Length: 232
Image (cartoon, rainbow, N blue to C red; front, side):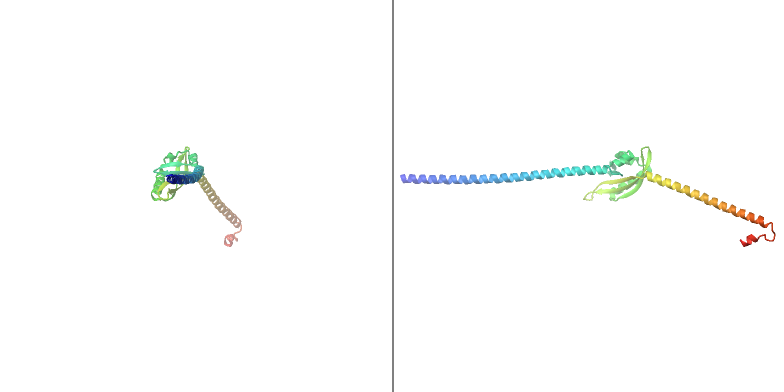
């Protein structure tokens, strides 16, 4: 019996030692797993944080680029307006300051004789995606100003129209200067015509005077009468 008890005790102790060892191994494995998982989670958090910073930087750069783009468009030295869905949806500072016209009033302020031609060009640009060029007269600041217009359709990567951009150059002063030059040219031509007429008149008068003098001289000597004409 003592031997049996000792054998059972040793067996129980061995089983207990084995269980402890297995438990220690399991705990070690769990510990290693937790450490690896923590390291992986830390690396993932760092990667996510870096990606968030990259996204924030990209958004900041995008916002800055958008502001710079809006500023560039708004400060173009020539007028610009966008046409979409049958109406003007945007006009830049140069156009607004130059004409004192709000975006929605751009088409309405074009003189009636030019308005339909401009609308036809805009509709054609929308439907056929083709650029155009033209000229319009606009009622602005209590006077009529002349603009050269250049339209260009803007489409997305799928070929769908987004809007039609129309660049407007105020050529009022240029046309006025051209008209003034033409007027001065006509005045110079008129002066030249009058001068040529005066010279022709003077030449005729001198010729008549010379002929009169010759006749007076020859009338004194009948033998030489008509000699100057024959020699001439």
